[in-house]
Image (cartoon, rainbow, N blue to C red; front, side, top):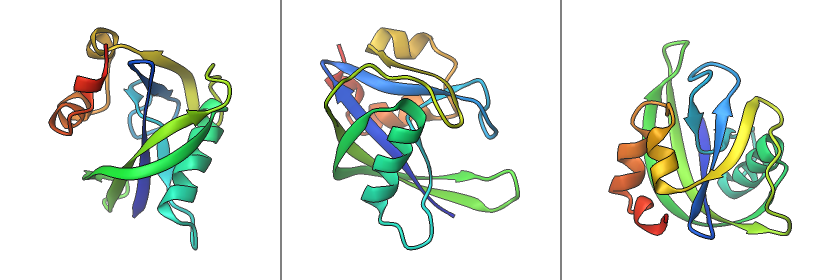
Amino acid sequence: MPCVGAVVVHDGRLLVVRRGQEPGRGRWSVPGGRVETGESLAAACAREVHEETGLRVDVHEPVGRVERPAPDGSTYVIDDLACSVRGPDDPVAGDDADDARWVTRAELAALPLVDLLHDTLDAWGVLDRLR
């Protein structure tokens, strides 16, 4: 099942959302979700960020790809894309996100994250960009 994740770093902080739905309900992740039929990865990424945080982003290069099990036994194939904020940068949770915020490296480490998020972002060099 094709999905996207948005890796949005702004002023040394990462944009994260607390998931309001399974999988990962109550845990923090980067904004993202399923790619709709006929939708490009970039369009899906920008849509998901806007739905979950109210922010508008420009979508850039791929950061990495992960595969995670879906509750129905299928597999989510998640393409994570680098994004930059366009316009106001105050996130407001929406859609299936219970909360949305910018976090530093230390703040990220203190949050209950979805499985493997911290290690994956570290392996991709994202944490090096955070203050």
